[in-house]
Length: 239
Length: 228
Image 1: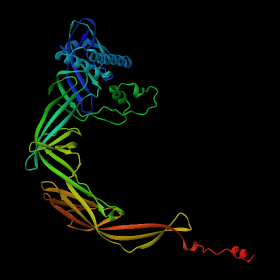
Image 2 (image 1 turned 120 degrees about the vertical axis):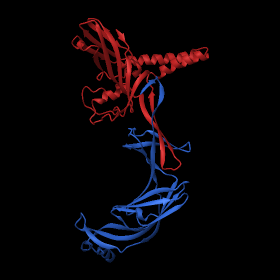
Image 3 (image 1 turned 60 degrees about the vertical axis):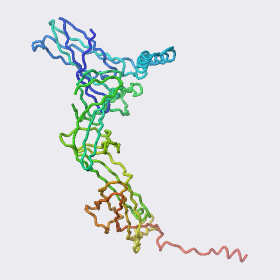
Image 4 (image 1 turned 135 degrees about the vertical axis):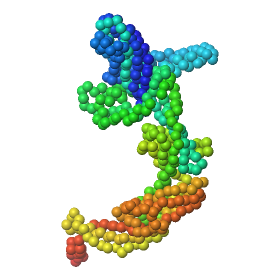
């Protein structure tokens, strides 16, 4: 069954990327229940994707269990072909449109802009899970995954008003969230972390090494995360 | 904090407002080596950074966050943060173009040269070391082109070749090898510091030892040829 759990919390890294937390209450039938999560970006990290069950009544713990999760990313080449076709179609719309009235113009611009910004990270990933239930009941499912999309990030800006005495000032601080991804987040609890996903390419001799060039830019950070040799700790999360 | 984050948009959220004490730190770092100490002119630069000591709880502000300074409701300086220590917000260091520094040579009194010898790699040679201690006097003029009085610290750091002898005015603090001068300069005025320094000038020349210098004799072949 296709489900679209609400994004409850979004912790954004100042260096780009973040952690998405989603939640949904599901009705279960006795037996095997398979669910497919909608709107999973291809920039999500399949290795860190996690599901936690929260039981409505404590007795359900032994009756409702998570059997498995199934995660995968879309094929890079096929996705790129689709993106290229979309971009080409958008160009044709602009080129061959006979008339742009005000309303149509805005709609066409919206479609064309969306396609011109689209990258592999805006494609859909697969995140399915199976719950085994011995009863007909309900369970709250919490889903958590990292997004390695450097197009969503935050920064602070400080406005310092210096007083006439020149020795004191008033600081006004703002948080600016820049979301250039293809995903919107409605009414989410925001978290801000000082963290930068590793981006440098490392020299490796490992046979299983996938050249960075073959990995989409948005995914390179996670591809290299496991090869990191230096410690990099998330410094602080501000709420 | 809850918000809507629409696709391909930037959103701005209020974070905090706070009062702070402002300290403007201006520094001039002066240092010479055996060669540069006798240059006719040096143009040093003043580095300036803004330190805000915030009231209330400390906030983690990332490095390189944009910071705009306003005076009288108008922005006058755009810079970014360089670091946060507790409640201290420290800006990046900038070069203050409104403070001009001229460092001119006043006098050089060459000292008496002393010659010593060191072994060279070739046993027939030695290194002649000529050492002299010059007395050098330099005058540093600092001009404040701003419309307000400034405080700055001139830090003269002595090196192995150039040492501090005395100065006018005297340094405010001495923590060898640093001699610091705390200076206050009113708007559109100049301040001067005269430094008297001692420079160790060493010249090394590799020479053949005297006992190995041969006096060339005129070959008799020439005489023979003349006789023939």
